Amino acid sequence: MSDERIKAMFTIADRGDGIALSKLYEQNGVPLHLQLIAEGTATSEVLNMLGLTHRDKEMLISFAPERAVEALLSRLDDDYRGILRVKGLAFSVKLTGLSGAVAGALAQNDHPTGGEAMHGKREYSLILAAVNQGCTDPVMQTARTAGATGGTVLRGRWVGAQRLEQYHAIALQDEKELLLIVCDRRDRNAIMDAINAHHGLNSDEQAFVFSLPVDRMVKLS
Image (cartoon, rainbow, N blue to C red; front, side):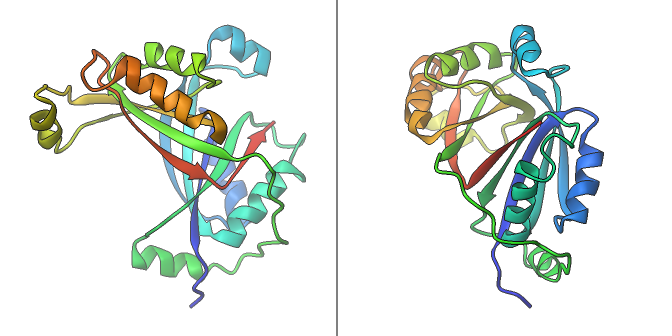
């Protein structure tokens, strides 16, 4: 069994494009995906400017050996550019752990992975802000003032938040929206600080913010 590291690859695209992308990814040695329904935060003016059709989004979280993920991102940035009729964003994130059975199955993947991927000089971060349901817009507006260009929203709920409630002497709303923002790493701290300052746990939005490093990002067009 190969001891090659497994990576996660996030893809955000218009709703309805997820199935076609997952099939393309499988052909390129990236076979395992979680498909999630999401919503973009871009205004209609920004959508028109970017050539996007709507705010309804899909997110694919894909898992594969590092070489396969990097080779696929290279092809998306090169071979498929101008051919793939999908608008969106794809980026990779390092994993620090993965279920053994899943890792073993992925390590046996025998699809060709292509050559080594070339990394760009710019570095990116993924900011995740869990906010109360219906409060995404003001948080995104604050993030934009600090350098963010857009985000994607997933819906969920708190589980096991009692310790946070006891520590802050507040009641946390169960229903949450998770705002994902990919940004230049140089803007990360300013965006997170702005969200914390204006929409922290003691505010109406009750934002809980954290970030992850992005290995590589590719815009789909």
